[in-house]
Length: 299
Ligand SMILES: Cc1cc2nc3c(=O)[nH]c(=O)nc-3n(C[C@H](O)[C@H](O)[C@H](O)COP(=O)(O)OP(=O)(O)OC[C@H]3O[C@@H](n4cnc5c(N)ncnc54)[C@H](O)[C@@H]3O)c2cc1C
Image (cartoon, rainbow, N blue to C red; front, top):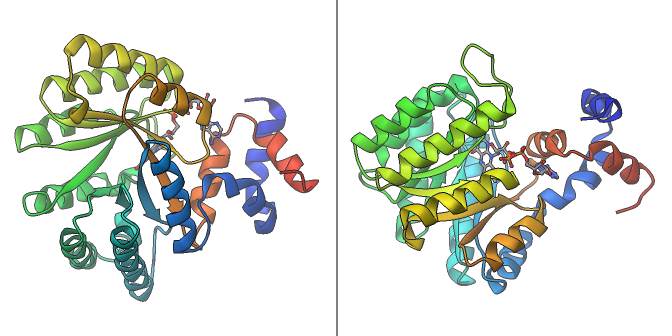
């Protein structure tokens, strides 16, 4: 990342929210449910599936967690009404984990019961390390009764042990990603090539053990190595798919689809867009250019 990009990343907290919103809009379907429906219909028409995330995280007020659950219930109705080819993704801190783990469990149960009655697949996103153990424990408690997937992060040193335990205890549906939060060196790999190496080791562990895997990355090296791995192992199409984020490297996404792999796009929507958007912007190698274009009103 250039010096200018670093400067822009460091300045994000003081950049006006209105400007962040303009430059981050490519990563978000919009604020309304209708926006998510429109974007997912477009993706479905082009042969891609989706997973919809109602934006929100780290809620500190139980009423906000209830509000988030209600948004998911409306989303399930819309998925059925519009026959969308999509699952949903949920962050446990959006439904109360940062307030009280028991509240998160009660809310998740409501969400999962409604998802089951609408036949919608739910995946629990993985957040930062203070929540890893509890998130995995909640996943294990609920997965016997519900169609449920989990996310693991290749940058965490513990992940191989977590994957082994989850797979020893039952059929597991993983999304494998690098991880996006800033974690201490004591628990996380920091070096790009070390993270890549661990990513491929984990993918091998998952596929060899018969798990289902969402290969979530925009890293061309990892995409190509993963393609080689599924081919070499003869992994069935039903046991893996690629996953990418809305607005990130659509050219790579289209290449992967053209090579015949299944692709699912993560589609966030809602008014709590700030935290998600700033994380995305920090990962954007051209962040300075986007911010300056935004300041000049160029889209
Ligand atoms: C479907 C999906 C779900 C995810 N869920 C989670 C989750 O639950 N928990 C979690 O911690 N993380 C999650 N992530 C984020 C993930 O952990 C990484 O932070 C993110 O995907 C970037 O890593 P990468 O593998 O794409 O590789 P990188 O090396 O970061 O990126 C590869 C290339 O992609 C391009 N690129 C990446 N980001 C951007 C951007 N914002 N704008 C423009 N270009 C970009 C660049 O060209 C870059 O060189 C998810 C990612 C995906 C794809």
